[in-house]
Amino acid sequence: MEPDHHAPEALLRRSADDAAAFTPLVEQHSTALHGYFARRVPHAADDLLAETWLQAFSARRGFDPALGTARGWLFGVARNVLLLHLRRGSRDTAAPAQETSDPWQAVDQRLDAAALAPQLRRALAELPTEERELMLLVAWEQLTPSEAASVVGIPAGTARSRLHRARGRMRERLTPSWRAPRLTPGGEPV
Amino acid sequence: MTRPRRPEPSAVPPRPLSSTRSPRMTSKGTPTAMNETSEYLDFPGAETLQAAGRVAPPSDQALDRARAAVLTAASAEAARQPNRTAGLVVTPLRPRRTMTGRRLVAVLALAAVAAGVVVATNSGAPAPSRRPTATAHQPAAAGAPAFLGGVAEVAATQPAATAPYWKTQLRTVVGAHTSTATVYVSRTGYVIESKGRTYKKGAPTWSVGAKLVDWNGLDALPTDPATLLSMMSAGRAGGRDVFGQAGGILADSPASPALRAALFKALGRLTGVKLVGAAKDAAGRSGTELAFAGQNGSEALIVDPSTAQVLETVFWQAGGVSRTTYLSSGPALSIG
Image (tube, rainbow over all chains, first blue to last red; front, top):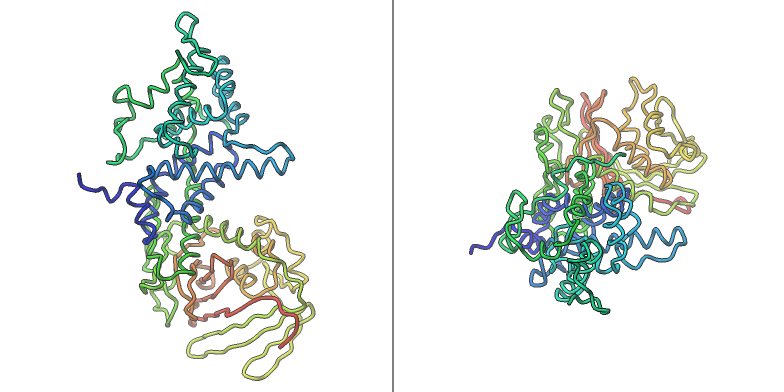
């Protein structure tokens, strides 16, 4: 197969020496990255999008196509920007530091506004934070499990196992009892 | 702000087709088969959850800011490593009105310094056709507010000066005449050294609307961009355009970081300011050029986005061109 010179990976790779190759990425991925922020910190989405591109441009030489897609890499940058923003915010309000990029309150407000069924909201709220983050990266950002793994910085297998467990928990809480698969104490479905 | 209830097409953005990605979705965004992702979303309510993630697409302003962020970063990098960053052109996501005029060749353009590709250079006497003119087909001012917003942030973070003098070294070219000068501004007056001679003058003044203000007057100006813009616009018939007023204060005055930031933002709100692109000043320094076709002539500013310093101002009038290059501008403890 012919290499695709317009593929985001090729552009990002080439932008290391040719900054002009970077600019199509802004056009290709801004909507998706903005959506990531709009769903989690709606009031800061515009700021954080600009900050993400600034960071991504400076860090572009660190992208290695062998380690994943450009999309996954860009979402990884976005997640770091979000984390920093949340830490900064919690420092300002003297609240305990956020350790994840899962601003659950904002997400829960979004689900509330979307009139999401209470059981579904509760089931999501009860997911372990790291499972919920992966679940939302897959459901909302349409990342593959491998991309979601690279965004969060864990091995792909770990991400798959967490997503698998998350699905099990969601099924257990949302399926009428006769269909619900039982979970072992360790969380693995049987 | 109300949340859009209606599904937005961008909510689940169609992913660009790429050979490196598994074809999980068709171009219409429908699942092709039971694939890995949908496997993990196989629980009751998953579709409801996905629908709850729908958001409105980013505004044009947000996209402009994203582009400006890259332009600023690339410009700063090009200044540091002229051999590494080649020409950069950011094109709009959506079609915009076509630009006219040889000067306005791109929405945002950063040309390679090393390659000698300069989009809009101010070296040499500009041909009359290069002058920005107000026409019926005004080029879209895409990018200028975003760029100026970024520069304002840089300006706001500069340290405030406490020294008694503000020293500016400048070179002015009007027609065939070139003059250089060093100006020391104080609270009570200013001293100009030029051609070995020293001139002392009264309080220095900068135009703000119909008024002239000195250093103390600058400190008393509001730092809200909207208020500032209306003050500069007031009673200026026959006077200097807002663009020139702001450019003058930004170029050689001891304005505070807050006031400088507000002035850059005010320029971002001013109708008709255009982002021309990368340019070199007469001293060969790289910056970004902004242009404005005013009532009394056309003006341009070359700004270094990494320092928020004005490198050069150019003024075109029926009588000719004047160009002032600010070789340095900053606080000084003493004269000399």
